[in-house]
Amino acid sequence: MTSIHIREADLTHERDRRAAVDLINHYAQHEMGGGASLDEAVLSTLADGLRDHPTAFVLLAWEGDGDEAAAVGVAVCLVGFSSFKARPLVNIHDVAVRDTHRGRGIGKALFDAVEQHARQRGACKVTLEVRDDNHPAKGLYRKLGYGEPDGEPTLFWSKSMD
Image (cartoon, rainbow, N blue to C red):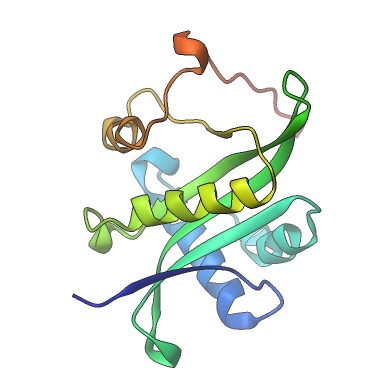
């Protein structure tokens, strides 16, 4: 089995930009991501938006080494702040692994890397949202120790500004 390496994306470099956008779009095309490719306007501005966002960081999972390595997973994270703990927190906004590479520990490796980044930032917790019907993801998240805050069911609500 080829080795997997996780590293922070450098969104000033074209290879990382393409890899991040491609993997996020791959996720969007999946049923759990909405089942459709992202709009061209989003695809053309996504890497710049993530690069320029003051609290965003993107982790990429690469299979193989050097120029032959292929991007097989992504975690898009945003650093926030917990007013109840008066410390930073890290929110995993998107996490995705190519369909062809699922079940090989890449998701766990991405989560391990996110948690390492969170510790380096002094974060009090890592948060994420998950669709109620995404049973494979929920199984992984539970296995990794994630769950409802304080054991209480929590819903993530939103209001579109478009």
